[in-house]
Image 1 (spheres, one colour):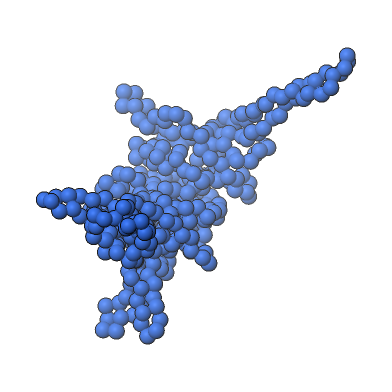
Image 2 (image 1 turned 90 degrees about the vertical axis):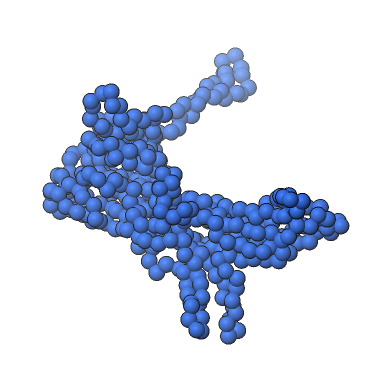
Amino acid sequence: MAQSLTLLSGSPLIGCPIVLRAVPAGYNQNRTFHRLIMHVLAALEGDEDYTTFDFSMPVEQRTSGGTTSNQAAQFDISSALRAVAQRYEYTATPPTRYPYIKFRAEVWDEWMLDGVVYKEQGRCKWPAEDVTISGHTYTFYAYAFIGKFTDMERLQAAGEDTQQLDVMTCKPATGVEVVHQNTTVVYPVAFQRGLEFDHMSDDAEPVFVSGAPSNGPRSDQFTPQATGAMVVGGRNVYVIPCPDNAVELRFISSKGCMESLHLRCLPKRVVNIQTDNYVISRQETFKKFSRATTRKHADYETWTLSSGPLSEAWASFYIHEVLMAQTMWMRRGTQWLLCHVLPEETTQLRDQSKPEMIEVQFAVRFDIDGAI
């Protein structure tokens, strides 16, 4: 039977690998095949039922000094959690808090011996085996959140192969962000947490302790009424009167939280209408012919926006976060309209050979047709 199932590597964000280490049953040369089956149960907060995912991996053997042994296997289960998280739909108004993903894993051996398949040989559970106290059975789960760390953040993590949540904003800590007067600023609130689990207390009479977060990642809102320098969400901002060509964007960052940007629109708005040509065939006569017709679509406006003058750190934020955002809205009047960034194949961060001001320009296309 499987001997153990433990956490090898992970973080509280499901966009990064969450790797479990499974130790299989001992080696038996008479087995025709031997594999490990991983069973993952996951649910988005609020789901009534768990979604199940199965992973399979053949058991590898290693021979050393004339002795053959089975090797431990590693399973990255983060893809299962991301599949569940796809059911969550962001809106332009930040929720009270963002949901968590609740999950657990089980592993067992499966092999064939003398033509007979032996299934579910032993079963190990993670984060812990079930515990029965006073006739009640407790099943243990782990908890994670939507989002990811960048590769650089993972390389710079304090732990050897783990990372804690702390700062949820992706904006640079240096410099000052320019925002518009009487325009809402949306910012993530700092949230400290690791990859945590249900567990039993260390008391003389242990009790079940839930690892479910009482709070969670969230984004707050603030509308500056006065101009000038101020601190919003622990960060320095400078409030200016709202210009005529002002644009308000909201996007979901790589950390899974909503942030806002106050920009200006350059005087360039285009529509790339696509035309498909067809021929309608019909029975022809001397004066009636088959005729051509066209179908026009993609009546979507594209606007060019500018970040304004930036430091290199802020330009990097625009390129690596804003241009890479998967979900974005722009406010038009009282409505928030879905849109997405159309980055160029190459976006210049900095050219030290030219003493030019750093500014990021990019195009945003709306996901609805018609006049905006």
